[in-house]
Image (cartoon, rainbow, N blue to C red; front, side, top):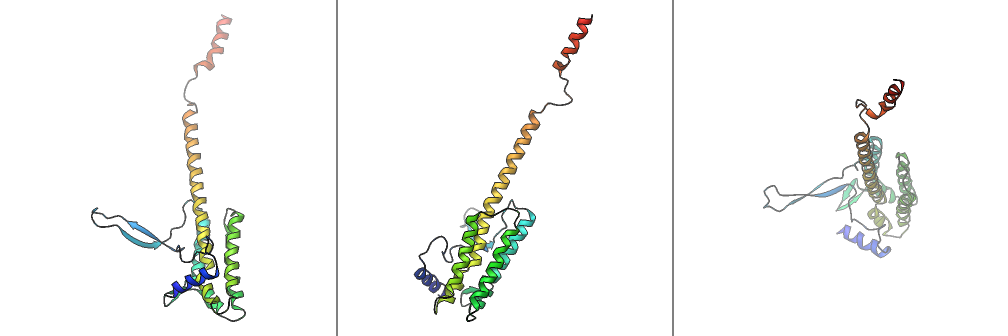
Length: 213
């Protein structure tokens, strides 16, 4: 019930778009359909922890796992009457300084994206910063501002934005690696066998011997 109230309040404050859709996609868990083994029973839908995007280096995967874990602690660690909230939600309830402390946590989390081996596009940075800014400004709305701020979950949104970019990056990395492997295979096929006797390379020597005779 409280979740529905937060959705309604957020739609009233903001015209919903791809930056402020609330509770549309879980950044930490995903639903997977398991087909029936006997082909008769309907397929089952289970919820599992989102996997780290493939194609990343071990270091990048470790950094992203850390970003997700901290985002969860800041936005989703606790639950009360159906509402998920984290440390940022508790800090936001502190008068005067609460919103400032929350945005500091979000900025510190945002800085971790610079630890990746790849450079994220400027558009990704702008989306991440926009979410942090919106979350900060929500705290200034009288009465319902703190509740809507809890529902907005800027850090979880940012974790999802980063994940989607890393998935695309990992797919491109795997595609490039596959293409390079194919080219190497073609070069191996086309390269001459060093053990093969090239008859034509000896023709000049044979001609010289015949001329001397």
